[in-house]
Length: 572
Image (cartoon, rainbow, N blue to C red):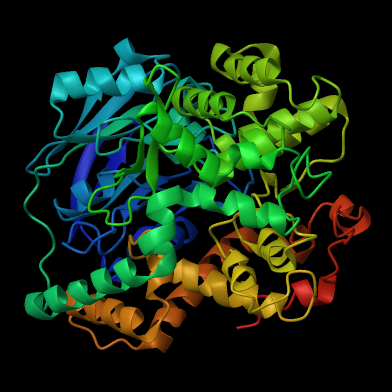
């Protein structure tokens, strides 16, 4: 258990034991509690006082399946709030196998300077000059880095958007094939990385010094139970391998909850052309791969490799949220265009969700027509070219709305909503409004409650409680390194019991279900405390006015949960 602290001002690297106050933490729990404890809440997110923290989950680096999620934390330049952004791929497992609890990047390099942080197979860390990679897009960058350092390395990097410090800049992670197609997209943490002067983090995958397990035999048995639960779950065992997250396109459109044309409608005309079923059929027809393994130790295989008409690789993975932002919000019903836009965002290093919504706001403002494929591609290319309008787009939807004086911008705390309209999924509206990190779909997504008909998405009753419970559960899950696609299979008593046994076997503890909930509450309290100190109040936990005032076709409903109800979301 060790921290690697990197000071970009002095170009120094220091390894230390994990302080007692951070023992037992991982992932989002570690990043949020550390940001709350060590970052001045009112600091400039792009200044030297902010810290950028890379923390694998506390199960990453073990033999447990699907534990390859990395949390990246800082104060967000997009929202001004605390932020944890989550990325898959291979780097969390690589860090875990080296016994690295976190890499903490502090200070700030001199203007224009750029470095790589290299961690070798023994866990030794060093800063390396990286001026030769300045301005490089991520696919070319990762190809070059793996040529220099070897293909048994994992990479987290920024593209030109991060170097330009755009507020929608992502941090891109390499997948099992060494492609930078996994993204910590939300919150603009790529801009923080660029402001620090760090182009990439490179970690050797051949480490063999993970933190020891307190009870290896019990852990192995528990891990088998987790595998059984994931394989046996209808969603993670069957739907996800076949359709990936794009399997949600059909049901969410059928529910009238797919925000389209800058959230003017709840159904995209022609959505069938961009559904998970249509995508899977097209990929198979062209010789692509619908059950790609994108992340280390994954048994779900929800990833895909989208190829063009000639069978040439375009992007991986084409996921639901990107299909929505680049398709539904823009009115584009062509998978080839959406896949191209996904690739461009990964290559330039921007969040597909913020960027798609930014393009949609521009279209809504008359800059282009909804459905204009060439205009959408041209706009995203402008971000990489750092044109005047590209700089506006790269700073997210709110910047675009301000530029065009268009108040119809679907954001909370500056961050765009996700692919579920609050007027047709009331509980997701509660999560968007109250999440400490701005509108966020991974923080407490209620869609599962609706698909299983446990909750009526169009009624106010039960929505606050559902959002609260899921926000607590996800805050805890994000500490572990377990991916969302697998964690939902562990909600039942068998899978959940096995997972809890694994955690106890890892640490030598005797935690119960209430202790896991307490972990999630602790994380949320830390995040909300930071935001309060940064100047945020309950008045910031509100959706844009048009969600309350404009009925959404086809149900013609508005968001109906009042402020008092919203304000009791975190009554715990």
